[in-house]
Image 1 (cartoon, rainbow over the protein chains, first blue to last red):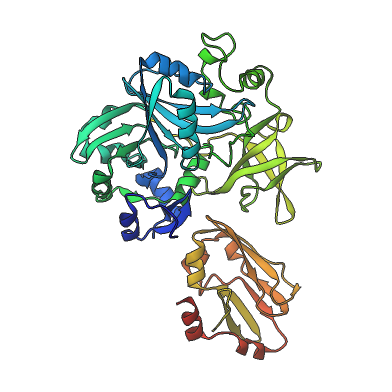
Image 2 (tube, each protein chain N blue to C red):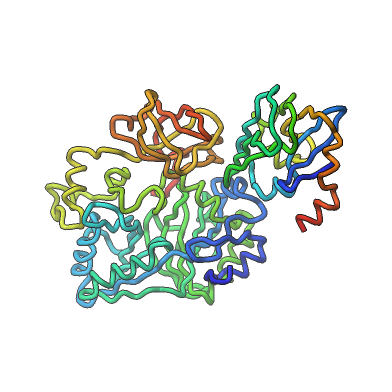
Length: 373
Length: 119
């Protein structure tokens, strides 16, 4: 793994017995000795600590005022940026001219700048994209050094507030900066597991100490990428490059909740983002196909790539993410099917090792979410 | 007990061969969530895929170590696939085979040779 990059917490992971694998160009822990199943269930029951330092962190600092920058960002995303209040974070999507998704991200309004977190595999693309389109209105400041930790689960607040009491007052999607013994930490009350929790950006000098302080607490276990994937799948959340990409539109992906009223037909700032014709058209008339939740009838997981068919044998699409859901106790999956087959309860078939097995379209999330609204 | 390069163990029980996967293999697979067992009374060729194990990570096959007839399968694994992680060398056997000549087992590794192989 010599050509792979190492993250600030590398030694800590190795010391904890993390099994390191290549992921998005980095050596990352896929699991610790507890294993994927226990790590998953522990996160839902107590608190799990994830190292997501491979993700891209960037500050966009306006050259003039924040409103100009917000409007420039709105030219890249079908999302209400101008209306996002100070100290708040929102989910965003970069789209292309065909209405496909270039990446999904989180962005926060921190008063005099925006702070963005983008996918690891897309950060090179995204930084160039931002530089190309925003250079006139903002400086693009990549935070290449900072580590990013996620603390997720019902006891995340109890754990993190021991180190920084201020986090307890935060609500889902709040974003705040605290000065702590670990240096300045940038905290948002968010995550990608369906649980309450926090994402914490920290300078590498304080990252290992912060992680050690959290792991020393009884309720906190280290969690690898394996459980991160099963947790987000149960929460019905998309993984870029699998469930969404340039070939899927936000409407097909069922991400219409991320397109606020202000950007829709009749809204204050209707359209004006890449792919608006298709995206607004699909909002109006419905998309041809949709991302749906899938519950295989048997115990065999239907993994990514599993072909989906109607019960009469017509090919419909494929599974984009799938596996066993440890909290559900059964296999769960998601994939794309034509709108006519997308209603909850629709009976389909998935082909596993040459056999067509029954699978039903089901509501997502598969496991109830617990955000602190 | 004998061992294959594919991390299966083979145990002679009367005139039958019982097949399972090693502790090393179970650990590498991670939490097993689904086991697809073969149909009893099928004749299988050496090296043919007879079982599928799905863990939280991926699917993998169990191969027939030798030619023979599957005479029994461990139905307990259908209801409780996690048994593979709990007791891989004991209760979590996968199937029993009837083979023509038990002497073919001499070609497989013994425990020391297997331990050398996995390091």
